[in-house]
Structures are given as C-alpha cells and as structure tokens.
Length: 200
Length: 227
Length: 197
Image 1 (cartoon, chains in turn yellow, purple, red):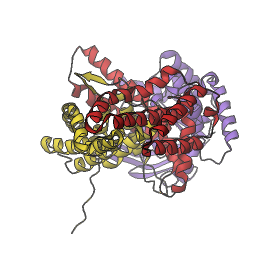
Image 2 (cartoon, helix red, strand yellow):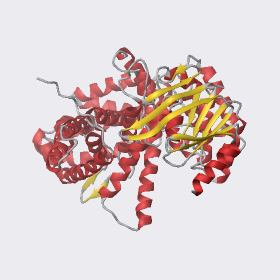
Image 3 (cartoon, rainbow over the protein chains, first blue to last red):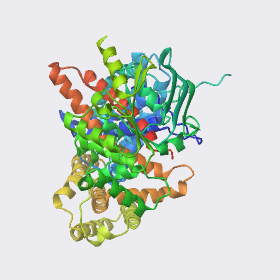
Image 4 (cartoon, rainbow over the protein chains, first blue to last red):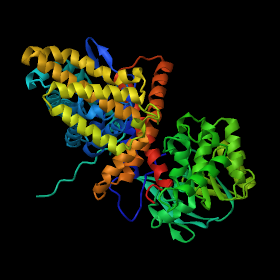
C-alpha cells in the first residue's frame, strides 16, 4: 500500500485530500488524548491534550499542525465535550480563565511547526528541544497567562506564579514530543515540506 | 460497463519498478486480478480511477485519459478498498452514504431518497442513524459498497475487499460482487471468489503473466505459488 | 453526535441559534464591564431562571460549571488579599454567571445547529474560507475520533501481548505512525469518492 495519492483536478485545491485527512486525524488525536481526563500528579492536574498540540506542530508542521488545533477547537466550541474532563462549548473560549491557553495552543502549534521545518531532515535533539519549548510552552503561556490575568482580574505576575506548577509537566511533554517526532520523521519522511528559500 | 485500456503502462516509485509494459483491454463483465503481495496489482487497479498516475503510458476509460479526466472517470468507476474502516469518512451510516452524492446537483430530498434506497438494498436501514464505527467488519464493507453504488457507477473496482473479513462475511461480500449488474474488477487472494468470473489476469513482478479463462489463469497462478 | 446537548422543548431550546448566540455575547459583555453588583446579581437571578425554564439536568449543568469553582478556590483568596474582598466577589460572580450562561447555550443547542450557525457567520468570508469544507472537516474529524481511539487501543494491546512494559515513546510512535497511514488511506478514499467533484 505504497501508492501515492494524486488529486489531479484542474482547479488546484489549497489543501489536497491527504493533508485534509492528516489534519482531521491529528485533531482527532488531540481529542482522543483528552478522553482519559486530567491525571493528577501531586496537586497539579496534567492533561495529555497539550501533548497532542505539541505533536501536531512538531509532526505536521506549522500550517497543517495549527489547522489541526483550530479544527479541534472548533469541535469543542460547537459543544462537543472534548476538552479533558468532558468540557466544551463556547464558554471555555471566552470567559473561562484558561481560555487563553486554547488560543495559545494555536500559536504554539504554529511556532513549533515553523521552527521544526528548519531543523528537518536532521532534527537534532537539542535544537528540536529548544524549538518545541518555544512553541509548546513559551508561545502557549504568552497568550494563556495574560488572558487568565484579565479573566480573573489578577496582576500579570501573580497569574504567572499560579501557573509555575504546570511547567515541570510541560517540560516532560516537550521531551516526549521531541523523541517521538524524531522517530516519526524517520519512519514517515516528507510530512513537513520545508519552504524553498528564494535565491538572493 | 466501461471500456478500460492500459497502453504501455509502467510505474516506478523511486528506483523501484512496480509495473512495466502492461497492455490490457478490460471490457468483460467480471474480471479477477490475482498475484502475490507486492506484485503490483494494487497499483494497477488504482490507475483505473486515477488514484495513481502511471509514470509511463496511458490508462483510458471509455476513451478518456484518466490522468486528465480523473473527475469524470471517478464518476463512472467506484472503488472499494481493503480496509472498510479507512473508507468510512462520515460519522453516521447515513451521512457516509450521502457523502458520495454531495456536489452532484441533487436536491436534499433526492439525496435522502437515494441514500435510503441504497441502505435498504444492503440491509443497513436500521443502522442509518448509528455511528458507522459501531458496525461490524462485514457491515462496514457493506456500507462501503452501498456508499459506492449509490452513485450508480458503471464499474466497480475492489482491491482485496474480503481480505480483512471472516469467512462468512467474505462469502457474503463475494456473492454480492458476483451478482452486481455493474462491471466488476476484483483484486483478491481468495481464488474461489473469481473462479467463475469471465476473465482472470495473473500479475507477477509488475507484469501480466497469464490472462484468460479462470481455469487456465488460476492453474498458472497455482503452479507459480508452488514453484 | 449528541455532545453536551441536553434535549428539551423549552423556549430556550427552540429559540433561533443565532439569536441565542447574539444575546449571550451581549450579556457576557454587559456582565464583564459592569462594576455594579446589582447588575451581576440580577444577571445571576436571570441565569438561574433560564436554567429552571430549560429544565437542564442539574448534574450536567454542575459538570460544566464545577471546573471554574476549582479555579476560583485559588483565585478568590489571592484577589481578596491583593485588591479587597468586594472586588474578589464581583470577579467570582461575573465569571460564574458568564460561564453558566455559556453552558446553558451549549446545553440547549444541538451540535448541528451550532455548526450551521457558524457556517452562516462564515458566509461573508466565503472568499477566504469555504464554509462547506469546514463542515466536511468537522464531520471527518468526528469520524476519526473512534478510528484513532481504536489505534491507541490496539497499540496498547500489542504491548500487553508482547509482555513488554515499554516507554511512553514506544507507545506514542506506533500510534502516530499508524494514524498517519490511516490518514493516507482516508485521503485516497476521499478522492475515490469524489471529494473534489
């Protein structure tokens, strides 16, 4: 079953069928990772959903990865209980203190994918770790924490303090993502097409 | 019934030659294609509706070059895959059948009527509103057939449609394929499925090894398996 | 595809989706910007009344609102110490009412209706976004959730069958790779079934 897929239509679609299917499968993967619910490690609830978001960026790249996250968010917004703990609906996107994290995921998948594209096909460990940390943690918190501060009416630094407890768990997810993405890119090359550089 | 022609068809994936020098004219009602794993038979049938474009040569359906007229050809040629799970694309049974009819300029009432008729034909009516993933393996392959036949294609191409099914369901799907009024082209390892077909083609190492009446072709293939 | 919808026939259920969405946005905006405790108290009473009229099961409603209570448990004391208990109470009240109203919308509107409303809202942007394709992608994803869950289950079973414990990486890699192969096959099926017609 190594046949290549061609969508030979006169009008070139922006997203070929295979990309469409990959986006849907990863959106489903993010959803499936939320089904077990949050795991409590000490006092901190850890959800695997943000792992799915890191996977999407590091494995599918900026465009397909962030579209997969967007699709997952749309599904949640229309009322499917897909967020860890069977939550969903438009409330989680607007007034919920954690609303910003959902938008942060979108940026995070994009940043992770954008940087990962520049590390392929070699995908060296330490730079990949840096790229995934920037996308999967820094970018996500960059959006998540200010929104939480606004929605809770708390100062920025206080809110940051409330979130420090999540960082160790997120770092573990980053390492896991890099190890998994490295093997996946070897087993299935060509997932992220590196933008061709214009000659100067 | 379609007139399907392969002219000087070759296919390479990288430096691996999968098919070479294939010349065929497929006009019979029921055609079986057999061959070992990796012989190139799956690639061959995927060329009939443009899922694979040949590296060299041309494939035509009723005179239309598949590479250039994939859209028109796909309306004539329905395709059944091995794994029914991977060809169900919509959440519920009914929606999955209706998916085939979208963008064909039909009214919603007409789509509903045809969908209901197809589900009824395959005994799936009671599952119409159910999630498709809850169906059994055999029912999923029935759903795949219903979803293809609802569009009334002239030809059905099936790539190992019974490989993942248990014996009973394999026989059921096999019987169904044998009794369809449409032209049927079946790739299979279940040789009894094609024993009373009009023609059987043996593919070996990317080329046509035998082609003709089932008895002769299957005898050649069996001796190949023993060699 | 039931989602969080809780069936009913009240006027809250029957109201047009776009109207509900508009009123919800308006209320949330009003509650969010008003410094007046009476406004928030009134909104809370109104929300409670709507829940009663809609006959939403208490348990289902509580499940959607409860996570906010957990966050408030931490945030209210911090807020109270930093900027006074009145402000902390207002913040908590705002948040609870807004979350409750959003949950009410979600629980009284079917997924299909919300999806249709979204598609209607997207229509003016038809030049940039193909609303039909968005609908298709949403349906395809809902189909893929059991597909991916099956893959996860099979990989875990294979691991148990081999009797190896295996690291998280050795579970995640086959799950992702098999999901990608499934995506290939789905892509082929979409084309064969006339996706681009």
